[in-house]
Image (cartoon, rainbow, N blue to C red; front, top):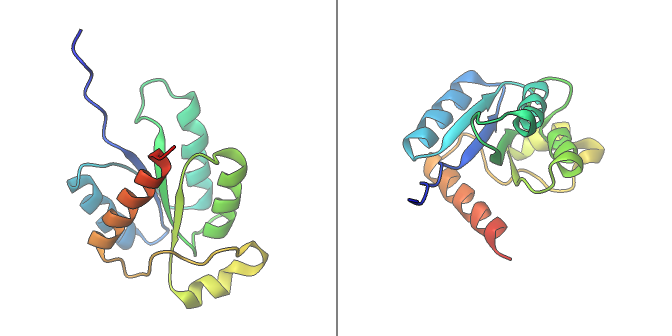
Length: 138
């Protein structure tokens, strides 16, 4: 039996700004990633919960990149807190300016944004690769 080819890494990009989200998603797809886009906290939670129930589908999300000023029932910090409880095995990176992080962090802020907007797409790819490699280490 031939070895199955590894499926591309699935990423979730959660950003309410369609131009930023779409541009970054297209670049990451060009780099060989499978990208799922979410426009809000609520959509991101739906995608992450639905992946467990999907058979076949897009495959499990292995990495999340979220804007700190994410729209919906919660912001990026709330998404990180929710993921710690429900999906602690999936790395999440928050992106945004220091000013936006300070504005929305409140009590949820244990760590500021790791990437600055506007994104330098090459830095995003490198950051994703580094975080996935850290996750793969025993």
